Structures are given as C-alpha cells and as structure tokens.
Length: 182
Length: 132
Image (cartoon, rainbow over all chains, first blue to last red; front, side, top):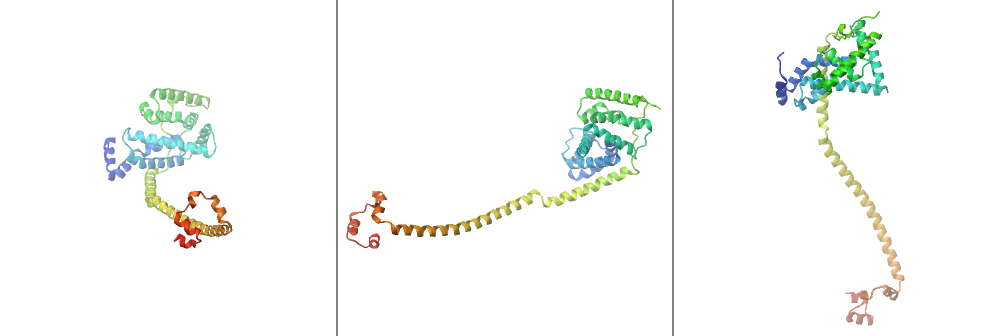
C-alpha cells in the first residue's frame, strides 16, 4: 500500500472524487489501532465492534469538514474516545446506573469475555485498570499499552501534559496497590 | 498464590483477541453500513426540507383559503338574514313614529329646506315630486 502524508490526503480530500479513496486508505491504516483503543475502553468485543463501526461512519460523514488543524490519527482517536464515552453513558442511562457501577458492568464483561487470551496476572491487571475513573483509565491504557507519547495523549484527550503525567503516576500506584492486595 | 505484583514486570501487550478474519470483515461491514447510509440519504433527498417545505406551505395556504371561503359564505348568509330582519324592524318602527316627533330629534340643519321646497311642502305637494 502506498504511503501518503496527512497533507497529501487533505489535498486529495479537496477533490471530491478522491473522498472514497482517502476513506478506504484511512480504514486500512487505522482500523486496528482504533479498534484496540475502543476495545480497551469497552472490554467486550461486541461493544467494541459496534463503536468502531460508528466511529468510522462518523469519520466518513465528517471527512469533508476535516480542515487538517490536527493530525488525522489524533482526530480519529478523539472521535473514537468520544464515541466510547457516549456508549458508556448511554449504557449507564439505560440501566439507570451510577458511574461507579459502569466499572462493575465492565468487570462482568471481562469475566465473561470469550475473546480474552491473557493469563491470571493479565486478567488481574485488567481488573485493576477497571478500578480507575474512566478518563484516567483511558489515559493509562494509551500510555501503558499503546506506548503513546504524553503529547499525543494530551492532544487527543485535551488534557495538559503535566496533568497527564501526574494522572499516570497516580493510576500506576493505584494499580500497584490493587495487585498487591488481590 | 500472589504473583507479578509489580506492574513493570507485567506484559504490556493487550490480552484481548478478536475472531478470525475480523478486520477483513470489519472493513466490509463499515462499507455496507456506509452504502446503506448513502441509500437512505438519497431517499431522504427526495423528501428533504427544500421540497417538502414549499409543498407544505402551499397545502397550508390552500387550506386557509378554503377555510376562509367557507367561513365567509356562512357569515354572509347569516348577515343577509340579519340585514333583512333589521330592515323589517326599522320599517315597522318608522311606520309607527310620528313625523313631528322624529323632527324633534333631528338637528335643525338636517331638515332646513330652501324656500322653494318649503313652499312645495306647505302646499302639500307630493313628497316624491319634491324629491324629484
């Protein structure tokens, strides 16, 4: 597959007939990364599949409005994060559950998830991340599992680098404690 | 047994997996949904605001005009009836009223006549002839 820079893709987007080509290119390039980002937030494969599809549909609908003020992957990660958070909010409203109950719902998803290959320690680690507040958990996942730079995470989540560093440190300590206790 | 309590020693690759050929399927699922979306939006184009709004306005205007016509016809038939009844009552009352009594209530300038007409009245000339 040929590689295109964001600038080249944006230039192609301006020509309407290349819109589908750009969209296909974006799907091929980012679908896995976007899926895994969403999967780590929602745990369940079925939910992650729905939200990934919704994310790409949002991307398709808004591709013509994309002005290139941020990088394409940052923009897509933002959409994916927002879609995942909206999904969790909807689920909470549907079941009339308070926010802390969301993590217990996700925990039961984790326990019943058939597409999970991890050992006990990895399961424990996932359980530990579920004790974190949702946004802190997302930031932790991006740093710890996706090995993203603070600057990239900061652009996606709209949080300062300093706050993210403090948050990550705090999250790591909490997880460490959870692992010691359990 | 407690194991791997240090986060640094844990494997930081994701422990989740996906069904076989999932990402090939995902791409085609996304395309299918977008095709449906395009079809629906084309369908909606026929019924979009630009076409529906003028039709709605026209229909509303026609309804208002029809409604007004019906109301006017009803009111007219009512007012014709009322006018007829009113005229009958006035005729009936005028017949009963004494002319002199009527003149008392009229302002003087309304019944002051020229000398010629005064003469004709005094000589009991027919009123129709005077008016002519």
